[in-house]
Length: 411
Picture 1: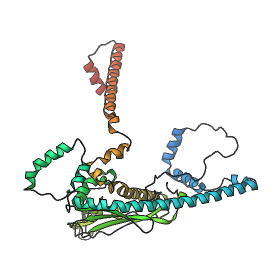
Picture 2: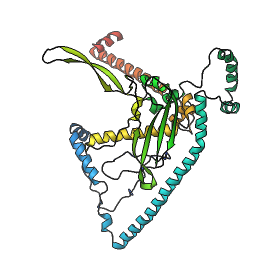
Picture 3: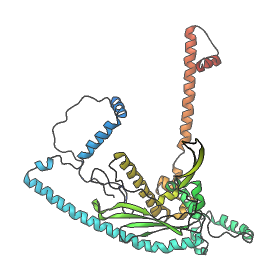
């Protein structure tokens, strides 16, 4: 559940609650047909012509959108036209709905407290995971047995026997690049990670989260000492508004990221470009170096801010970025942190793509079938072309070799 924005321009994107409830908007008003005059049959509209008109006049599209936006929330006059007793009943139903909204808000608050309660139980497991990942401890025999699958037990035991001699010479601490590997398997995160980022993310030792005293949560990335920045932790905090929205949901407000103390010339969020400059008087040229923003995962800690400009285009662009930024935080909170080992091994991908209740073996590879169909279509087209060429030759009273016909088509 999420809170729809009720004014013309949304100050912030619609966001699910901290409990990761589905982000499906519940309709505020009924879409039932209201009484009105009979529909008047109009002449059919030439859709192609209309589309062409709108394509040539983007200003017209913007004007229409503005007019439609100004109608949102405006009364049609139907309710006001009802008899007084009926209007009183409508008001009574609104009063009942307000009581319902109070209970929904209470429900969301209690769900949040329940989630916090179980998060406290999850935390020791996350801490135990961190000690193993970073080589501070080894898993117990019970933990290993619980993690083994039946078909893997023999393979693991055989490998352990063969690796005993190697361990005498090479010792690997923990699980190297655990979090980097897990993040690269998480689709939304992988798209943000560049090759330059990987060198820094190899030093990532833990990713965790915590709830705030007010509605919201904080993501914390812990790093070992590295050549890129001095921070031991880099965090990002997501805040919700103090008041609940429609249906009792928490409404996303904004996010704040901590500053990164980059070492000199190690800032991964910028790149250095060389540009030539010419002196107007002496005509001499020189090469100067300038820094320009570039793509990087670490831009995640500099979140977009809510729109303040009245420009519709700018506001819409920022709102989309805000929504994507929030969803990325939700993915880290609800997917990456709780199931990090599944992302590390890649097992989580099958559930991400197909859903928990679907079996990948139940699906056929449609791409191969499509390619076969395309090949058959191409063969049919070539046969049709040859038939047409042959028919043309017969009409001219000549009979030419097929190779010659093909050459004619190409010329």
